[in-house]
Amino acid sequence: MNRFMAGQQFHQVMQEHTDYLLKLTYLYIKDWSAAEDIVQDVFLTYYQKSEQFEERSSLKTYLARITINKCKDYLKSWRYRKQVLTNNFIHPAIKSRNRIIEEDEKLELADAVLQLQVKYREVTIYYYFEELSVLEISQLLSIPDNTVKTRLRKARALLKVHLKEDDWEVLIHE
Image 1 (spheres, one colour):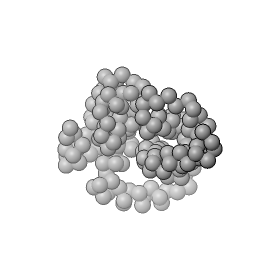
Image 2 (tube, rainbow, N blue to C red; image 1 turned 45 degrees about the vertical axis):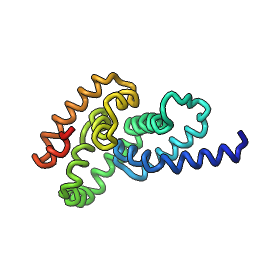
Image 3 (cartoon, rainbow, N blue to C red; image 1 turned 90 degrees about the vertical axis):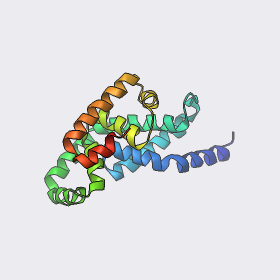
Image 4 (cartoon, rainbow, N blue to C red; image 1 turned 180 degrees about the vertical axis):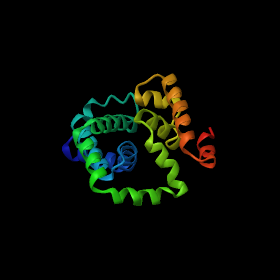
């Protein structure tokens, strides 16, 4: 395949998957500018290693797996830890504005989900917001389906503590 055709296909892949990957990344790391950087890095990795894609799963799943790994790497990085620490000391007013915004009922559920540990957050997002099945989540995260079920059960228990009764009923409907 010539470079022009490969470039067109790559551009199409970017157009089809950018929004999904940005949302996924943001749900992991809670920072839009860092999410944009990570998604660019995901596409760069895909471009460099596209011949390694064996099509055992969908391209969306493959890109999601790369994204998840890069998000986890970012959350372990010094850059992330330094940024969180700096924001807590330098920008306390931002927290006040965010608390006012979070009072909106629509944001309360999302905020509670974002407060979960990553392992509970990811299964909750995939199950309730992306509407993936337990088996699909299991394959995406490379964990047993019983682990997915256990994490969902634990996430629901954690969320129940933080949410009002009305918000909780919306989440547990299965």
